[in-house]
Image (cartoon, rainbow, N blue to C red; front, side):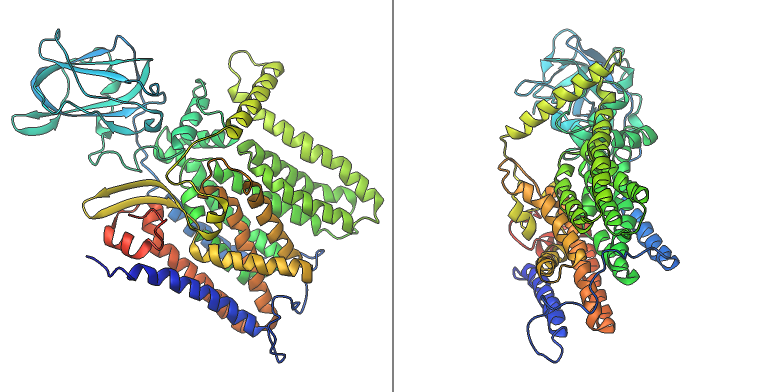
Length: 613
């Protein structure tokens, strides 16, 4: 089925027009009898009071629960296989000899790689066939690159095959870990998997043959994108092996390891923790929105929009550390808001718990990924604003400054250092821990500051804002169908959210609204540090900023309620419904669901820079 070429352009234009119409509609509704275009700078009937915050009530339990259950179902459905090879054999230079028991024509050698990889620019394995066990013919290539760890992979065989009985397999440059080996031969005109007569002691290569996938490698039975680093490192932490990936702090990989401990070194296992944290983001978002706007309806709609964001959905369903970065940043802003909205007559000691939790969240975020520290700039801005508001209370000022040294320096420092404990090998000591932490920070800084590389799906910050260059994590074609996992924002959130950020920025200066201030401060704190960076960056670096787009939109929703609550409810519901509709439309290419090519390229590829083809 082929759609007319112009069909694909209808959807982006319709979405852009909807955004323009929606915001103009609300601007117009704020004109009143004056008939002036001053909605952006006109104050609402009641400004947000910084010393009053919304609180959860019984009526919030059901919508929070429904959203969380719906998100949980979507997150864990087809997350990954629960079974994968768990036993591995080390192939060294001597190798192994496999006796098939009879001469046959080898059709395919299919194997599941382990956690170590061959050296770059060198052959990884020697794979050779023989009829007599003495004279071997080497095959074309059998690789185990770092990009192929914990994946099903095919060896390249010579195009002209002869009858074979013995297979010799050895590692070329260094020992390699292999999980399972599948040998498919043509026996009497029938293609079938062979059970060898003897396997040279490498029984672990043939003890899980029932796990061999009939469809080959897919996103469900192996690693994709940076899972080759983070899932692998999580397993190395659990098994106390040499750590391969040390370019990020350990905590995110230690959280991934918890899922592996529960479900094994399987795709579901290494993705479980990220999916869980992605679901838990939603009740936290509901809580933040309720605190800010004290409206169950706005909180519900904003959380549904966050649930329907493509980036949140895709990024939390793969085993990377960005999920934990966003989760802890969200917690930071929840607690800084709680601290700022405490009444001025609150006893000093009662102001400390939310401040401590904010520092704790900051430390956990920094221990998961350095980019969480960017959000600290936003925290500092809000922190100083609150101190300025309380400037007449010298006891509060000096007490808060003193405790902040503990909460935001000592506590995060302890958390960050403790996250490196699993990296210390041999007898543990504080001096060894300190040296591990110190050397790791130097290495990470040098690695990221000197990183010079290219990638077909890299993008810059201005492309993130426009949703112009998504990243493809997995893309395969079979017949006329496409299976894909792509990371980008929901276009309605991306474009509508930026319009809301502009409105919030205006209200920060014109109306000094705290809801607008938090949205803009959070957004700029996690985006601006990326602007001067010239190294390789990707769309997922915009993930933390996307949650502040939700906050900005909800601020605009709240503004709508001030003039015409009944009409505003319909308009907000319409915006939320269209966001969900786009999620449903794009679900196949953000979840890895097979879809006809005509639908993918004819309906979903809105711009040439979108990698849907």
